[in-house]
Image (cartoon, rainbow over all chains, first blue to last red):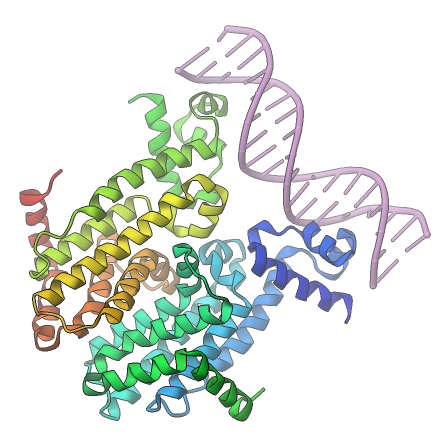
Length: 224
Length: 224
DNA sequence: GTCTATATCTAGATAGAC
DNA sequence: GTCTATCTAGATATAGAC
């Protein structure tokens, strides 16, 4: 692996682990056993590093959020879609840890980041509309707007909130699956008669056995 | 007003406006036209300042969160309670702007801050239980846990999320009332037949006319 | 490409005169 | 209580040798 790429990877690793504001250029150089001067040969500075990491995040997330859920009427598909969304955010979670600080210090990523949040909300809205059209969900337009906003907010701050509560016994996988369940719990009450069935399926997937099913779906139907 | 108090007030003002990490001790001194040395005569440093501000926040918020809603069956009372909660958070919003950074830099406030979040969740849970007992809300125990968590999360990150969307035409008052509506929209779908009535009342309060009613309630029944 | 050495800049903090 | 002057530490960034 080329030095430039090693720097990118080590930075992401350190940013996620320690938090971006707590990682200095010297820290990154130390982690790789190279000199700070060498790092500055490859990147003008920390800003360029963060920008490049964000660009990678943006491109991939953009694709994910624009891909409509294949079959939102099936509980499993919504679940799987949310897992993908959460996993991607988790891979770049340093961006979410102190959003407003990041957006302020690196102004260039402000607009695209906001665009992603709006995309997220739009994706949620689209799924809700599909569910309503299929007669599964009973909700008016205003309700859908509120619901989509709640979903976007929950997804965006889930990692922060979980960390804030500070009482997680599980690992990162649990963290993500709990987040998915939390997001779906916002939709459930609008489902009327099918609500019970809906949440039962969700809880089944949430169990270890169900996760194996997610793994199967991933290897079978996943694009990469 | 004594210098010490002027420092406290100016700090809160600046922290809220610019964000705590962007305000230096010199900034605070300049704002008050006093010397940095003078500031350090009154406070050991920025940490002591933040701690004192947090303590004030904590004491008041603790009281608010432990005060049960007078009559949760009346829509207006829930609304008013949430307004009080949001307003208090808004007065110290710098604490919420970069929560994880603040909690990391000022370790002493970590535990009490977490306690407040849990209290918030407990208050939400208590209200839900009351609504269920009264037969107004249909929901099981697991559902209440999820719901209370959603409410706590929404309230905690509402200001951040709104700022992130970046398309608010209104002022701070609108911001708070929209937050209240967003939080209540989480409860609404569990109300069954009364749902329509519930949200209609909420939207009425949300209008300018309704806010006058909140003002009236405040002056009539408010403790301070 | 990589290193060592060093310069710059900022924020936090202190000493001592008034 | 308040001021001026100054110090320290940490992070970013650059110069020039290898």
